[in-house]
Length: 583
Image (cartoon, rainbow, N blue to C red):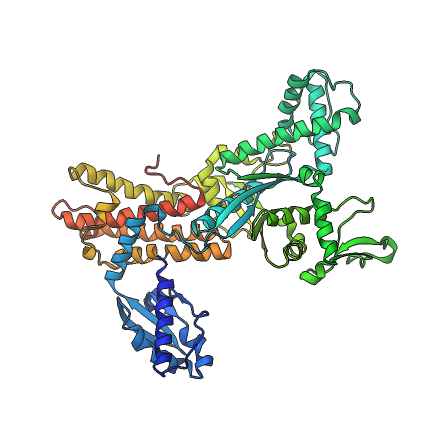
C-alpha cells in the first residue's frame, strides 16, 4: 500500500466535501497535489502542497486555504497533528499505531511488499545490451545490461507487462570483419602462423571459434576464395559470438525474453515496409541537407537524398534514410526495428544505450512518434562509462579481449551480485568508478556489503532466537500477531516509517525509469537498521532478544523480520540474491 496515495485520496475527499458545503469552490482539480515525505523529518511524516496548488483555483491566499484544510486533515484516522508552515505548506504527523499497522502490512505481504498495480498491465519493451556480436562484452556493456535488467524487474514490480529484448546487429560491415578475423584463426588452427592485420579483431577469444570451425567443417574453406566462404563463416561466427554473449549475460544473471536479428528484419522486407508506411503518410521526401556544422563549402558535396521529416517531430533537422549507394542507413533499419516493436504490441519503448549514442536520441524519438502516430513513447537511457580501478589505479587491458577488460573477468573476480549492485549506485548518465579494492572491502563505504550485512545480521538474530527460545515461531504470520506497542523508540519508528515508504519509492522509480533509486533506499534502510543495532549495544533495553520478556522479543523480531523482507524485496528488484550469512 502506497499510503501517500491513500492520503492524497483522503485530501481530495476533503476538498470535495468543503466544496459541497460551500466553504470552497466546487470542482477544484486536485490531480497536481503532491503528498510526500518532508525533506526534514522533524517536520512530520507527510507534507502536502495542496494549498499552494489549489489557491489560484480557489481564489484564496495559500496560507488561508491551508488553515481551512488543516482542521479537516486532523480528522483523518491516525493523524495526531497538522502544522501550516511558511506560505501554506501543510505538515502532518501520524501516530505510532499507524506505523505499527504498516509493519504488519510488510509481514503479511512478505517480499511482495511494494508490489503495485500502477502499470495496470501496460506493455513495455526494454531493449538493452544489444552489443555487436563481434566479441565478448566489456564492462560498459555490463553497466547497460544491469541498468536494463533492473529497470525491467522494477517495472514488473510496478505492474507493467515487460518484454526484455536484445537486438542483434548482424547486418553491418562489422560482421564481415568478424568473419575475416575468424577465418584467420581457422587457418591458425591448421598450424599456420598468422598475423592479424590492422582493422581485424585481434583478441584471443576468436582462437576457439577458429578451432570449432575446423572441427565442424574440416579443411573445406582452407583454400577457398572469400566470396565462397564469407557468408557461411559470418553466420557461424555470429552464432558463436552470441553463444559467448549469452554465457556472459547468464553469469550476470541476465536472461532476455527476445533476441531480434537486424539481418532477418532487413531480409524480410522490414525496412521497405517501414519506409512505405512513412511514404504513405507524406513523411519522406527527396531533398538536400544543409552542410554539417564545421564543414566548409569546399569539403561539402550537396546531393539529393531520401529524407525523413524528423524536424516535424521534435528533431533538429530532417534525417537521411538512404546512403549514396542506394542502401539503407542505420537509421532506416532502426526505424524499421522500432516499428516492429510497436507492431508487436509495445506502447512504451525503452532503449538502454551507450553514452556514445547521445546524438541519436532525438531522431529516434521523432521516428517512434511518427511511426506510432503518437501512440507509443520512447525513452532512451544512456549508460555512461565505467572506470575500472584497483586501489585507485587504472586496471590494465585484458590479453583475452585485446583492447579492454571483459565483463566476464570482472564477474569472475567479484561475483555477479557485487557487479549488479555497484553498477546501480549512480544514475545511468553519470560516470562510475568501479574499484576492485573498494567493492570488496567490508565497510560502510562499500554499499553492497553494508546492505547485505544488514540482511545477514537479521538472520544472525533469528538463529540466536531459535537457540535461546525453544520452539519459537519466526514465521511472518506469527510475528504479525505480536503486540507492536512495545516498539516505541524513535529509532524503531524511523525504521517502520522508512519501510512504509517502499511502495511509494517503487512507483516513483518505475515512473521515472530510475532503478538506481533502489540502491539509495536500501542503503538508507540498512543505515537506520545498523544505527538501531548500535544503539542496542549501549542500551540493553533496546536489544532484540529478552529472555525474561517474550512479548517484547516477539515485537522486536517482527521488526527484524520486516527489515529483512524489505531488504530482500529491494535486492530482488536489483537482481541481487539476499544473503543470510556473510562468509
